[in-house]
Image 1: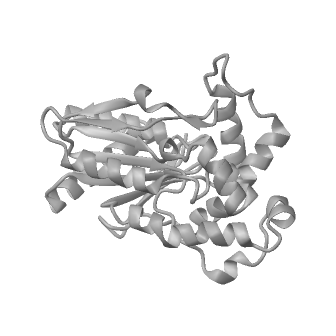
Image 2 (image 1 turned 90 degrees about the vertical axis):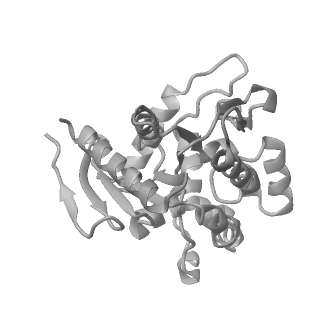
Length: 283
């Protein structure tokens, strides 16, 4: 059995234990840096849970990004850096909470619309093109790069972490706004999580190489924006750097799966279900 299969089995056991303990449909957060494999992992978990009689819906926090028009308005009214999707404050938290609530309340025959976002066009997909989940669910998997993240201490916001913050957020207004969103509406959203899983990257440098691979793999059409070059990609990821580094340090999760640079699980720490970690080295 591979390390990934062993990890999936452990995650399934812990999710089912949470479902039994709580006695209702559960919402499971799956956090991981860009390119860490959280979407793929969530898909595998959903398939196994479904085969075990636990209907499962998968949501990505990316699909709740504000529309491009909404972000342009936010950039005008609050801070120019908010035109770039990603950080807390660039999602529709209200839409995410409403969708989660509708899924948890769904009964036989109900259809729950699932929002979608097209990264190649940097805009939300028209509602007429959304898919729907039919019927009740026992498990909802909410995956995303900042799912479960907690606000930083105020003194951590003082120093810039990269050139983007130094040159375009010299007064710290953007990062304070993002941190305030984590302390406010995003805290309300993440309070709905019954179990939090973190797929932990080994370090921030690895995240860049993962995101570069992800950019090359995006499926594009004639209406898509061109792929980002290295300079554009580095600037894009700089928007995520502060919070990604904070998540790696803070580990805001009940279960932390440590990954190596090839995304192979090498350690499984279950804080809620047990106090012990199990380690398996790749190869």
